[in-house]
Amino acid sequence: MLRGADTSKDGSLRQTRQAPAVLDPDIPSHTRFPRMTAPSASSPAPSAAPSSGRLASLDGYRGFIMVLMASGSLGIPEVAKNLPDSGWATVAPWFDHVAWAGGVLWDMIQPAFMFMVGVAAAFSTAKRLERGDSWGAILRHAAVRALVLVLLGVLLASNWSKLTNWSFTNVLAQIGLGYFFLILLTRVSTRWQICIGAGLLIIYWALFACWPASPPPAASTIKWMQPHDVLSGFFAKWNPHVNAAATFDRWFLNLFPRTEPYVYGGGGYQTLNFVPSLVTMLLGLICGERLRRKDSSRTKLRVLVVAGVALMAAGLVAGIFVCPIVKRIWTPSWTLWSGGIVILMLAAFYAVMDIKGWKRWAMPLTVVGMNSITVYLLFQLSGGWIRETLARHLGADWFTGPYGPMMSRLGVLAVIWLLCWWLWRQKVFLRI
Image (tube, rainbow, N blue to C red; front, top):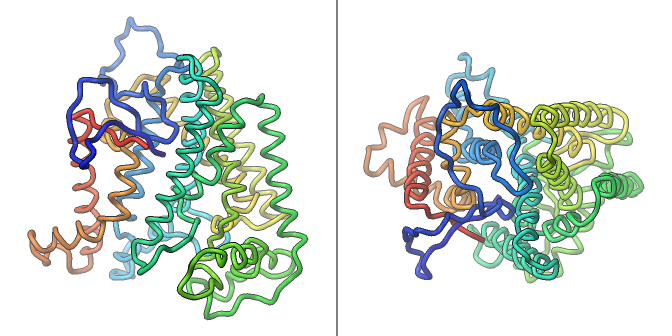
């Protein structure tokens, strides 16, 4: 999610009296941090945002996901290893990626991130049309934004390389690869959006299902997995490094300059993930269009809950009979299952913040959510530097011992949050 406000050309931040711009590649520029006041007894129940109005729950939801990411899982998996007989071992699996099939809380960060791009696209596109922008201007803007996101993804992937690392599995690159098509789909009806999304998933499934079976991946290439994580039978077509998308990358990525030929990528992530993850963004677009309608807030909430539960159920059934639920290659079953979960998460924030009007509690999240691209780039580029700096000036003793990893992650999170708070106070939001 990415969108923001003005900075000077030299990168310095300046306070402006203009309305703050928003920070997602799709967040409508009217999104502002509201005054947090509890609704009075005589006030009417808050209703959903108008066609291009702000959606407080989207700020809160985005902030929650960004705080979760910037927390670095609070070092809980490392603490659990340091204290194997403690209760931390029980919760640790929820704060680390699964080896291959399945999913936990930590695996929901990227689908939620991409889903909210779609939700925001519904509002931002409507706003641009209302102010008189032509479709040509909207599509040109989308094309430029998509290119910038892809290049940012490559930049982040190259951060620890001697040369440019032409990899497109970073979340920003994945959003960029699908973003232009997402904006194109704002022009068609919901029925067509659903049909196109279903068609993409069917085609993507057929590509894997019809691909010739391959031997299991070599153990040396999947060191993050245990032998029991390797799939067998028909589902073996979705194993890491031997699936259709991996074969595509061995051709596609070797078209770019490389120090050595590409054979397989770390973690089993593939470029073609952007096809089914476009469907995740499309789910967000459909939900955003629903939230823009003039229906009552409770009707909208009911639709979100029903859709979320239905998609979760469909994903679980597909995970048993159609293809495994694997985030790293964004299988159709993962798209449906995770899509249901992220919709239910939005429904929860919508019920609390937009229907009940309880917004004050979410201020720490909203401050982060309104500068999400800043948070993402800071965490990716400066997280290690912040940890080293804190240890240097506060003393390494703070970050050693069984709870050292947790203290270190909390320190990074605190620094990033304070910067976001300062930027919000200055009404400065990074724009792409």
